[in-house]
Length: 188
Length: 159
View 1 (tube, each protein chain N blue to C red):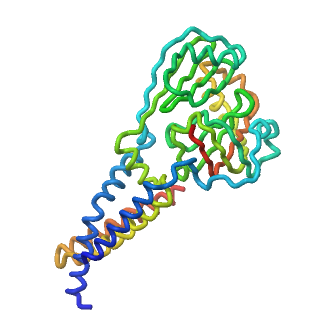
View 2 (view 1 turned 90 degrees about the horizontal axis):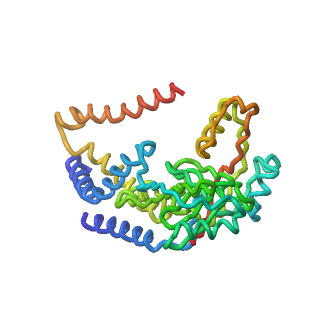
View 3 (view 1 turned 135 degrees about the horizontal axis):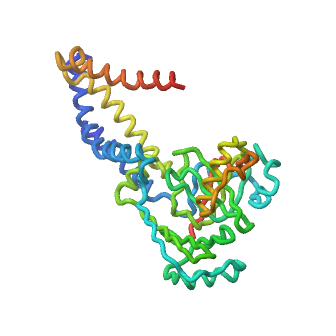
């Protein structure tokens, strides 16, 4: 194949796949930044904590205490389950949260959580939490990125291409992960 | 070239349709469960050393989930107040907070981690803080062994 024809094919592949990859790239890029800082914030859920006090139910047998706690909490939504976590600790689980009740003091902590709009779904896809079906999509996307990266090398000729600035930038792109790998391995 | 684009878009659309139509019954995490018998959490905690290194399967209500990365869950025992922790590899399995209060069957290898005195004090201090109690590190005289299931999979039945 002639170089001119080869470049034409590269341009076509790069352009078509580039348009196709915009959405998926945004999914992985936005989610990547969010997940990268998982130790600073919860990228998937918004959480709320509310404290209040009820009349102390006492620390008697669970069978006697449970209806008292539920009555005093005046819960209006279906209850998933309850758990006596300790002598003075009682937990009530609901959809989207629950209550931690101190049976001795009547102090209650209400925990709530809700999925972050959009970001939860982006992270779900990025982390491949849904497994099988998304694995196929992610594999196709990975293949597309490889083709785009390789075809991108041959798009521009001359000073701005592989033999000039493009080549220097490409070398930098290789050097960064290599240096990081060497340094991080060296550091144990 | 249009044919290639149409083909790729079609593949993606089909795969997405598959994702949407995926089974929404019980949720399987990781490798799911395959061990033949489910054992009582209380039995596991009564004789913990007996099961170290063995694959165990337990069932109970999820009463705690790692808030940061979903990398562990606490499963309630059949004995009040007791729980067993199922730790999974970060990112391999992610337990969502929605499973709190749901019935979970989890499987993995029962492991024992001998803590140093310093680690034991840290764990005791954290527990005391969580329970709102005073902590005096002079009261800690022996090293603790932390038992947990190195989880490989779980099945959660939503209520």
